[in-house]
Structures are given as C-alpha cells and as structure tokens.
Image (tube, rainbow, N blue to C red; front, side):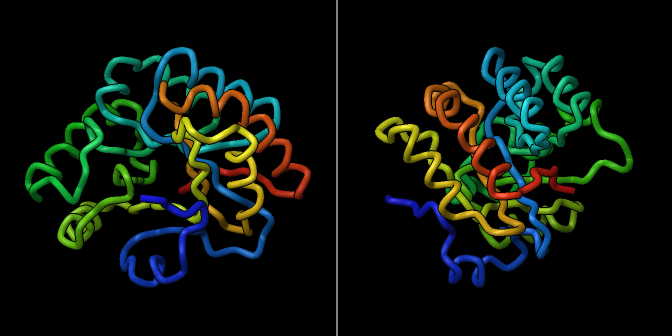
Amino acid sequence: MNVPAKTPKIIKLLGKGLRFTVQTTEPVVYLTFDDGPIPGLTPWILDQLDVFGASATFFMVGENAGRNPDLVAEILDRGHQIGNHTHNHRNGFKTKLKDYLDNVALCAEELKPFLTDKSPLLFRPPYGRILPRQIYNLRKRGYQIILWDVLSKDYDTSLEPETVVRNVLDNVNPGSIIVMHDNIKAEKNVKAALPEILLGLKSMGYRMEVLG
C-alpha cells in the first residue's frame, strides 16, 4: 500500500482520540523516531540532533529498550523524550485487545525505571494501526496516542535519500509531527537524509521540540 507522506485530512478527522499534530502557530515541529533504541544508529542520531540544537521524541520497542538501557538513559540525559511503541512491534489490527494491552504494559515495564511522575505517557501504535477499543483502553490508562502529520518513509529502501528529505521538507507546517526511524532497515536513508532534514528545517525557521 502506498502510504502518503502527508496524512490526509479525512484520516485526521476520523482518528478520534489520536493526535496527528500539535495545535500551534509557532514555528515549531516535532521530530519522532520509532523502533529503537539500537547501538550505532541511535547514538549517531543523538549527535546529529545536538549539532542542530534539535530535540526529539523516541518511541521505543520494549525489547530494544530492555537490551539497551544505557541508550534509553542517554536519550533522556541529552534532553529528549521517550514513548511506548509496544514490546515487540505489535500490529493492533491483528492483535486481540488483552494481548495488545499486555504488550504495551511489557514495554511500559522496561521504560518505567527511566520515567518520573511528571513524565508524559506517550504511545505510538506500530504501523499506525490501532482499533477503537485499544484507543479507549489506552486513553483510560492515561496515554496520549501519537500518530503523525508527516511520514518521511525512510524505511522504504527503494527510495533515494533525496526523496526522504523532500517528503519531510515539502510537507511540514507549524505543529507537524514527523516520523523517522532508528532501526536497521532505515539506517542508510536516515544517515544520508537526517542532516539535510535538520538543516532544511532550521533554514525554514523551525524549532524542533519534544512532545509532552
């Protein structure tokens, strides 16, 4: 399925209980990275964010967080935010309610040592696939369910990095939530595209801040 880089307005209207953008007129956007943290790529991303004075939110797979607690701590120490992306990248359309909630809870256990009472509870469903009952139950548990306004498609190995850059820079607006990935599949595109994206956003006058 060819997923658009810019989330259509009709999807946003139908996505009750989901957050696609942040309502603001300020020149600010919200970079997010899904699926990590992983050695090598995640620290490289953190260094790039530092170069451009950018902050980001990392939606973590619980298994990866459990394998790399030092990276979870480093992300927070360097001024970024973390969120839940299920324990092992569950597709909400293919998972029973109890199993889905249990999987989110497993990820939450991995992240719990790094969170405080003031930390926002952020959740992003893998693939953006989540059912109404899953939304209802997660919101009851206090989660903000974060989707996106702009999809970089960095995971698509058939795309050139230049296309990934344009997917972001041609589609951002104030308040846009942008999706990138810190996983092995996306690594080549991320390493080529991220510096150009950060430079482009800066040149357009945008600040890059964490979700909260």
